[in-house]
Image (cartoon, rainbow over all chains, first blue to last red; front, side, top):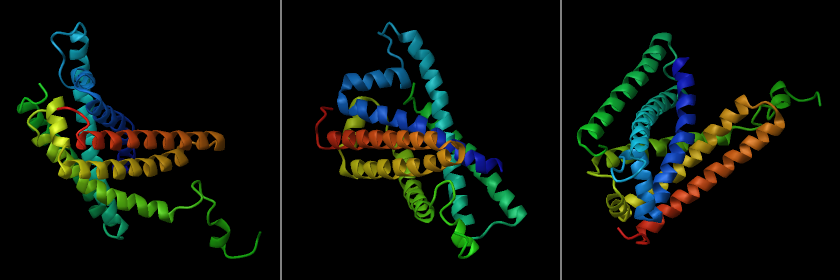
Length: 127
Length: 129
């Protein structure tokens, strides 16, 4: 029940939020270094020489929260998608198995999100 | 009307009018997304920095640009299929439904085309690193 609606919610979040941010990232990279830096300073790391530095720092934190949310959405949608493949074969409908599969998708998505962000935040790439 | 089997009378009358082909393509793109997104996440995590120079140099490799183009095609196609079902389920008024579906198509084709063009422009050396 919960995992089913999460599949839809995470998919919609990625399609709209993820799609726009991903497109902005690629288009800015293809335009110029200056255009890319606008993306970079607002989303990844604020620019110390900019008059918007304070506001950028706040947006950076919000962007990280959105990034963590989208990463979790990706892994949750990926895991429940794989679960859908199993259910499509007609397997896994026994109550206990079904419930265990649903819980596993949540365990996977939280673990994978923590791992990815632990690496991103400790390697200093985003700071 | 009134003749034929029960199934024959209702077939095609759901909110989407048809479905098998849509359902199948959603699975095909899902399988492609699974492989390509794992590659993408691992690649981004492994990049030491994500500034302009690093991203441009990364995208110049055919072994990056081609999978990324495939990722864009597969995910945006999957977006379109998924959001179409979302709209068909939640937007009940026929005019609004058609308008939402047109907007969805405009969104995925515009963003998808921008992404593919941007990747190719960088890959073909159109952007100085």
